[in-house]
Length: 122
Ligand SMILES: [Zn+2]
Image (cartoon, rainbow, N blue to C red):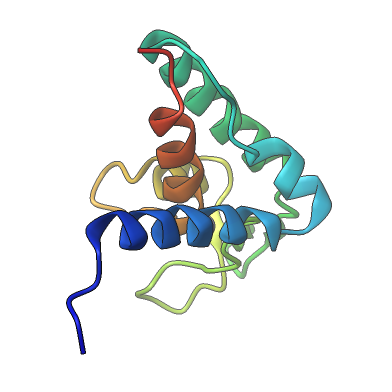
């Protein structure tokens, strides 16, 4: 077998990223669809606005402590540890989407961010 060409792999990776976004339910897809030709400052602003709009998509339900929780609207996951079905809304979900405070970063949000960042204005 010959060695795969790096540019072929890069193209396949890019197509896979686009597929991740294309497979989202429509409402979520519209929010995280990559934007093109933004400046790096606009990419950062886009990211924080997008995180807030994804949080608005969550459908929180109170847990046994009457704390509102919801799975991530993008990847459908909850916290990896503990007995809870979802992240606290809004703060736990925000940390998951941002990958802050040692939360496992949302893979779907990371893909959307990478696509937008890769297409930024140089
Ligand atoms: Zn997620």
